[in-house]
Image 1 (tube, rainbow, N blue to C red):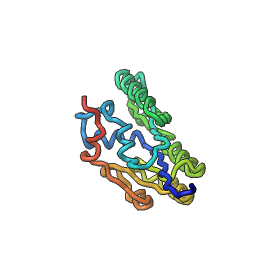
Image 2: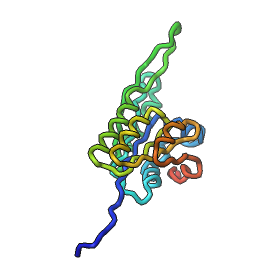
Image 3: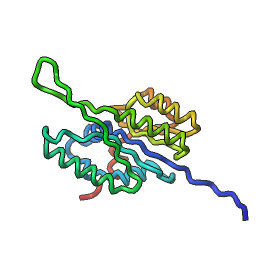
Image 4: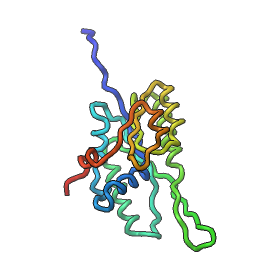
Length: 190
């Protein structure tokens, strides 16, 4: 019995954690916490009827000395993310930079974009997915998107209006703006 069947499309989700956190905070303020956000529900809503192969989340650990409470909260948040099936937490570097002429400093997240771009291109080259869902508003991903598309894969940009890149949206096959109506369904009721 050699009948034809349609194969389910495979999807990989790539989440720019810093971009996502700030987009969520902009929409909701401090009213809602990332602790109550269900990335599992979020991924399922985004993928729809496609099979989720993996979910990548890129971020960096906060400075434990600067704010021990925030560090501990983030540590618990990351621990919960690791419990989600097929979830891959990619920790990048957080560099401390001094503001010239002062004793003050700020932090810069490094290597997250390059890790995300490499994972997207490798996944496409290794035929791991049919569709890449790029959750970011960063236009720096355009070269990676083009490389993924040259491997005959589709790319959908998932973005917040506040931090969207017109260039990224134009180069993706589809795009979806994240708004409260969509995101409200992704919070756990506590």
